Length: 256
Ligand code: ADP
Ligand code: MG
Image (cartoon, rainbow, N blue to C red; front, side, top):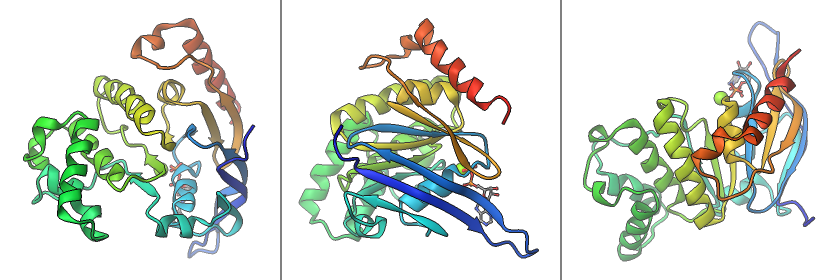
C-alpha cells in the first residue's frame, strides 16, 4: 500500500467548559487515509465527528496529537486552498445568484474573470445545475441548494473535499439521489473525500471505508472496509451484501 495521504495520530480534543468539567470530545484517535479514498466518519450525535473534521480542516487545533497531510500541516494545506468544505446548511448568499455564489471563493483569491466564468460553467455541469445559474437560492429546493454548496466547494479545484452531514436535512429520496450524484462527481474529480454522517446506509453506500466513532469520549470503535463494487447505483441498496454491511456496522454500535 502507498504511503497514506493523511495521517491522524493520537488526536485528542478537550473543550474547556466554565463549570470546570471539561468535555473530552476526542480521545486518542488514530487512522490513515489514502489518496483518492472516500472515507466516512460515522457515529451518533456528540461523538466528535465535526470536531475531527474541523481539526483536519485547520478550523480547530487539537489539544494533543497531530494531523499530517503529505507531510504538511493542515494549516499549510488550508493556505494552499486545497480544502473544499461543505456544511450541513449550504450557507448561500440570498442576494447572489447561483453563479455568483459559486464565484465567491474565486473572487476572494483573485482569479481573473474569464477563468471564473469558465470554471462556473464547468461546476454547474458537474452538479447538474446548468439551467439554474441565474436563479437565486430561495428559488431552489434544499437538494439543489446543497448542489450549489458542492459546486462552490469544488470551484478552487481543492484536493480534499470535507463534508459535514451535507444531506442530513434532506428527505430520503433527495438524499439518495444526491448520494448517487456525489459518487459520480467523486469519480470525475478524483478528490479524497471525508464525509461526516450519522446515517449508516449512507456511509455504506458512499464509502471505501467507514470509520465508526463512539461517544463520551469520542473514540474509534471500528473501521469497516466496504468492498462493494463500483460504480454504485442506488439499486445496490437492495442487495444482501449491502444489508450485511449495514448490519455489521449497526452491531458495532451495540453495547456503546
Ligand atoms: P458530532 O459532530 O459527532 O455531533 P461534535 O464534534 O460536534 O460531535 O461534539 C463532540 C462533543 O464535544 C459533544 O459533547 C459536544 O457537546 C462537545 N462540543 C463541541 N463543540 C464544543 C465547543 N465549542 N465547546 C464545548 N463543547 C463542545
Ligand atoms: Mg456534527
